[in-house]
Image 1 (cartoon, each protein chain N blue to C red):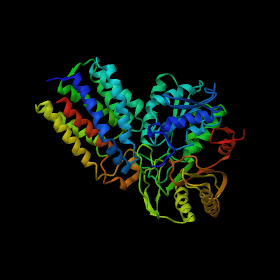
Image 2 (cartoon, rainbow over the protein chains, first blue to last red; image 1 turned 90 degrees about the horizontal axis):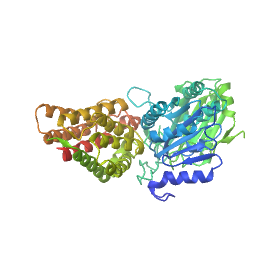
Image 3 (tube, rainbow over the protein chains, first blue to last red; image 1 turned 45 degrees about the horizontal axis):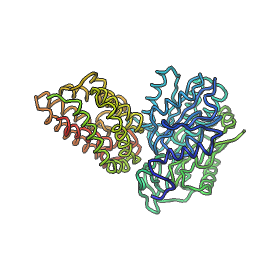
Image 4 (cartoon, helix red, strand yellow; image 1 turned 60 degrees about the horizontal axis):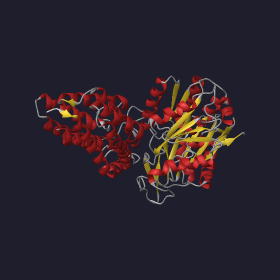
Length: 333
Length: 209
């Protein structure tokens, strides 16, 4: 393992110290329990939005704390969900009297810990709603799995729900909006390499020089199947087709196209992929009304990408354009 | 012979020692079908438990279990934190005020714990989870005690049943947790949670009997 770290057990706290130093104007960092809140929290009269998950997905979630997006983020150990006491403390810190929305990716650990946190927060009289993201079309949504994973659409839910909360909508309205975004978004990812969890010290899986994993999540876990490396045009089709088939998206739809890097893929490759996505969607009469290209929900240094498509309407488009000021996403201000 | 409070503390200490020793193997199992953090997470949690034990050295068994539970819930994360935390929290609820346990009280406490795990994780036997080691262990313990078998032997049978339960998970396709995302590819590997649960029961057999 070759990483720019001090000790593996200090990775998360060292990174949090760095975020506090780099973005002290936007976020405050709390240690033991670990969480980040926007510098002006709690905002009175506004629904507080809390998300969280394992570390190693940077900039998610800590990079999205600030005006117009998250009020707090709870980082767990690398690829391990945070604990209920972190989520409870974060919820208390951002409760501005309008209740708190928890945005939870559908992974067993995240769901169990957020469920316990919600029980604890409600016992203290804090109103809590939870929205679970589950947009990954690589996983069959059946009784025989833990259900679809929450991946790329989580970033979009956080932005759009954040904008809705900023408009002073009620907890119920913000939660409904978040659920609508989740219901209209789909994702699929692939990996060119594994990644190395600092504690484990070696790659989570081995891939041959000419192999890729199709249908991965965001934790370095292997995907649904292993295939031979193909040109970007074919990879784009392998990712986009199952997404289009699933909602389904149809000719005339407007979408937000999100091409996400997994941490180790340069922008030049993401743009190549975005060009292919554009070509595929144009051929089907689907209009890309908004886009996001870059590494926003990652798996450490994994090379690879995911594609997320979100069906847009006027309301979602306006909320997407609304101002946001966070360490990793910033416009309109 | 009743199970003393000190024996329960030795159980927890023995498990912490085994986790420290086996954490790399548990993590490797989890790398095969998950994300490679189970050994590390469990070890982090039980090292924190070890640090808390002296503070409750004069307290009853329930307080001991509750301390373990709350420490795991606040330090482990992942699915293991809430699940193992719930196991010990339910055992704490069933042992209120007790300085010693009879074998049948231990079995009742363990039953409450296993029921709690199943309800928290919404998992049943056959899903390829820790339940597949805990449930057979509990049944073996109950059956042996029902037949009048000595505690030490009953716990040995429970440990054997847990081990068989763990081995039985090898060919299965996971239905819960992160391994379920691998579909057919999760087959051929023992479940990490069933493995750590087997170790827990094995430590009980070594310390409580």
